Length: 362
Image (cartoon, rainbow, N blue to C red; front, top):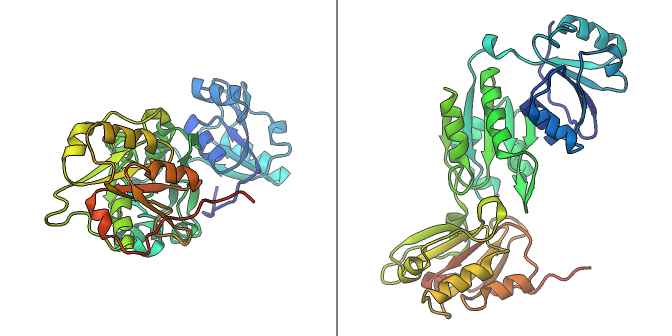
């Protein structure tokens, strides 16, 4: 069969997957497809997706009527074991006017590669030159939920884009499934780009993806990005370290494993360090962070500033002290990605970083 590579918007499109695996199914679901799967012996992961109501699963060989109402059909290289061949399914799809995609057989595919790319803090102008070049050569882009559309537009029009991001506890795709999809795409001979906000190996689980790719023997490159702490400080016109004021910089996450509370940190060491503390993912849990630092001996009057949606047009800045920054964030109804900087250097930020008024519902 001959073909032509293209990118499709699968939002609410009925799609049939014949004898596929979990990674392919989750990729289609993440792209918005309404999915029907036909497989005589589906694995447990596919069965779980069906039990959750995310797809319709038929535990049998392919039948021509499975194509009824479908707009697209994807089929494994060897068809359904004991059932129809790819050629037979293709013929039936053509007769019914259904687009067909025969999934590449990993053993016969050209050698692919993966790139873990940092998209920076949000503003496309802050992408590295290398990140742009890598995006321009992508066959498939697995991206975080909040990546700016202007960044995604740098990938070729033919490149498939899949939102695999997590936001406020809602996961488009599990981390294990992302890892499998990365490996699957490399084995299929594609250049897969995992596009992550900030830097790919700073609080983004990029290390897990890197380990999965290395374990699979995949060729992988890490392209650094500007992490939020650096970009935010630049926007505020303040240093992160300053002679006589801050001797160190500490990056911590306020988001625990699986979203459960604040991770354990050595709060006494952080409070006594005399440095600058950058708190990632802390809009909801900053009260616990502030309480822990105060209990560990940090001064209540330590300057603090929270920046929501740093570097983007809807950026907001909330400037207070350690004692009241958490309450100010709550009163301002902060919802977007927020980085909080705590330390004496915050006093050096530009004067326009004034407290923002609360956001009121219409």
